[in-house]
Image (cartoon, rainbow, N blue to C red; front, side, top):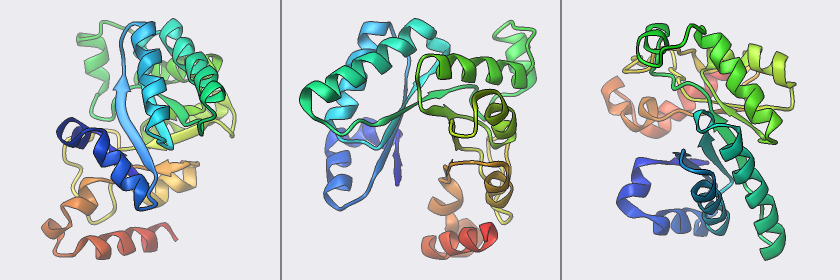
Amino acid sequence: MFKVNDAFVKFGPELIKEIRKKGGEVFLDLKFHDIPNTVSNYAKAAAELDVFVFNVHCLGGSEMIKKAKESLDEYCEEKNLRKPLIVGVTILTSMEENTLKEELKTDLSIEEMVKHLALLAKKAGLDGVVCSPKEIELIKKACGKEFLCITPGIRPEYAYSDDQKRILTPKQAVKKGANFLVIGRPIIQSEKYGMKRVEAVKKIMEEII
């Protein structure tokens, strides 16, 4: 599966169509966050593109999340489209505790905020959340084992952490119950580590096994 985010800004829907034409699946990672009506339109557009999964930002609130989910369900049934999975973004893996306290002005810890947002997503009917691998266990405990955890912040043993703060290795994340691992730079920038991209993927697979 290919995660599409900044590339969508550059290449647009044609990139997704090309990936689908070649048999690939797409995780549309645009973190929709707007008024409920606008986000519901984004959800319909994502379904039209036949993506496998897309996300909305939980900080948009329960009304926005519910509207996106309801609109997606109705539209896919009406148009006879494959229904994408829809997941909520909790707290970005680049954020730390002090960011919540100093900038978002909340006394909740990252774990408490992530749990709160995950429960908000579950109550709205979403399929899961995007979260740090360090929060997988608390989310599964709060929302159930079937609730999906898509985890960025994955750094193989050979890779630098870059701007990610709350990270685990692929093996650690899988052991904790991650459903999908998002791995970008350790593969895309594999030449920094003296290997080709295919070699990087194989190394990650070996690490998981």
